[in-house]
Length: 182
Image (cartoon, rainbow, N blue to C red; front, side):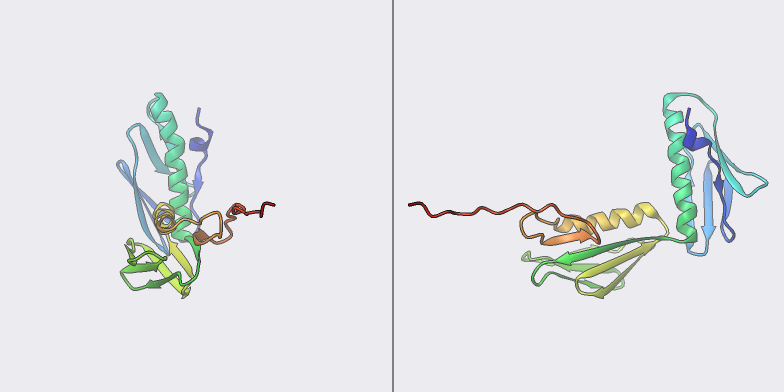
């Protein structure tokens, strides 16, 4: 039995949830997000302004999707209310980034620049050439774009050069040391 799926999602002031058939639309001050409910899951908004999910079948797949759907909808509610943020930092000599309205250009020591199109719903700020701040209402989109930026040049273990999340600890390895033989 899914314990997560049974827990109702409270809707804060300023956040509205509309259930239309198999689609839930959540709207708040930071935007509007939609989620199509999987087969076997239904939703309703009760009189206490809580979003409740129920299972209409008891198969293993429906039971697992019950908790997943509840978690995604809870993330959507938090996203339209406060939003999500990921911060990345670039470490390396002459490594830098440049943001334009539609794309993020990364210079990471390769022969060519890496140009990543900015997904819809994500706001990119570059306070200085070695730090990136991503903001958005959809947790999955913000996290996926941050992962794409990091994958452009993962931090290497010897000098720590590359793109990393702010606060990420990169385990360092000791390089080879040559000892003179007598």
